[in-house]
Length: 226
Length: 202
Image 1 (cartoon, helix red, strand yellow):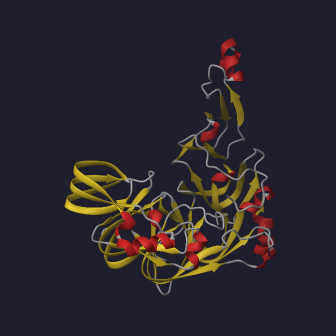
Image 2 (cartoon, rainbow over the protein chains, first blue to last red):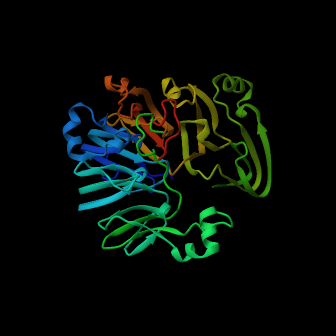
C-alpha cells in the first residue's frame, strides 16, 4: 500500500518532528505545554492546570509567569504525545545553560528543567536554564547574528544577546514630506521606518513572514484559550 | 492539489472542488451524495450532508480545497470513517454512507453522525497541515483531541473521555479536558491543528 507513513506508539520519534507541523514528545515525567496544543497521545498522561495542588513545587521552580498561568498546563505521566499548533511550522530547540526570549504565542512546550519567566519586553517570555523547548513559527525559522535590525513582526525571539531596542529611520522621519507621511499616514508609509535593533553577541530568530502567530493577549486570564 | 487521471471512468468529488482539467470532462451534481433516495433522506435527517458531483471523462482533473493538504487513503474492502468536511474525492467504486458515532460527534460540534466510505479504491482526505497517521493496537490505545481528528479505519471502538476533575469544574481546568479514546486495531488520521469544537479550543 502506498500512502502516508504510519506511526505507532513505538515508531513515533523521540522528542523530534513527525513532519513540519507535528512534534512528538517521549514523555516520562513532566512537560509544560500551552493549553490546547496536544493533538493526540499514547500511554498514561494527565493534564493539570498550572498552579494546582501537588504541582506547587514544580511551579515554584519552573514557572514565573503569572500573567500566562491560564494558558499553560502540565502534562504528567508516561507515553508519546503529539503536539501541533494551527498547522504552523514547529521545531524544537536545545538550550544549554542559556537564556532565550520568545514571543509568547510562539512557545508551545518546554521541559521543566527550564524556567519560564516573563520578559520585560511586553508579549515576550524568557526561558532560562538547560533543556528542550518546542516553538511554532509561521514559515521556517532563520537564525541571524547581531548586529542586525529586524522587522518587529518577523521577530520570533533572541538568545544570549542584550534585549533589543527600537530603531527609527531618522533620515526618513526628519525630511518634511517624510515626516508628514510617517506621522499622518497621508501619502502612505513604506512600513519599514521602524525596526528592532540587536547588538552584542548572540542569535536572533526570525520567521519568514511578517504575519505574527496570533496569541492570547498578555494579561488575559481564564476563558477557553481561544 | 490532487490530480486524477480519467479514462472514461468517473470519480465522486466534493461539489465545487475542481480547479482545472485537461481533456473532456462532464460534471454532474449528484443529489443525496449518490446514495439514492434512502441515502438522501438519511443525510437530511442526520445533518451529515454532502454535496457531491460525479466527474466523468477522458483526461486529467485537478481538485483542491482552500489550500489544504491532501492525503490519499487506499482501501481494500475496509471501511473508512471520515468527517464529511474532510472528504474531498473518492473512486466511484467506493460506497459512501452515514453511521452513528455517539458522543464523540457531539463533542466536535459536527453532529452525532459521520460519513463512511467502503469498498476497494482510493479516497482523498483534506486536512489543515499534513495528516499524521497513528496506529492503534490493543496494547496501545490512543487518545485524540476531538478538534484534530479527521478519519479512521479498522475495527476501532471509540469512547468519549472527559478528564474533568473537581478543579476543572471550578474554573482552573487542565485545558485538555475532552479526548476521544480509540481502542482496538486500526489507523487514526490526525491533523496538526484543531477545529473549533463545542468545548472551545480544547
